[in-house]
Image: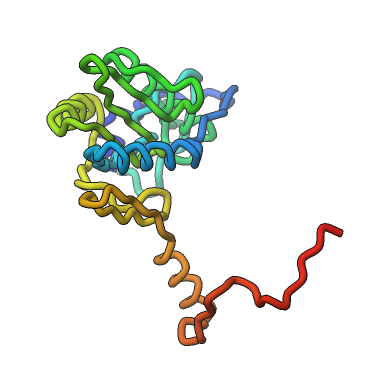
Length: 223
């Protein structure tokens, strides 16, 4: 409730009929983009940091008039009153799209360019031949750059507009653990935690491990 009040997400009005929305499409980051950014980070020895956008969908501006009932227990509840939403709310079909549009406009206005291959990847040339890359997975963000001070500057830029939570060096993205050895310039992604969770759920965590996925005698055919 505090986030709703802070973002001025509603105001009290007389109840009219109807709820309206049109386009709801929102892009999704490509897994290829994640691998490219991680590969670039390893090869060029970039700094790689992670941030989280708190209540990301509440930042989106609505383009259509939408009303909602007052929540149960509201102190000033009256039978003929509802909320007129000023901003997006979790549960609305267009919330992901409106969040993307709000974030996109802010980044473009601050000198970043959007990748023509992936709409959730942004980059900026802050010096000749020097780039900073930003990848957003809904509300989970990776920032990669050779110069740490440029990352700090970008963090400050984001904090001016959004409520951000810094998570330090990137450790995990989309359920994949990031394991990095900067001395040898290697970076690995793993889902060992997810695998362990599945094993625990199906109670096979004490079973014997195998060295290959299938036995050598197993025959595979296209027919």
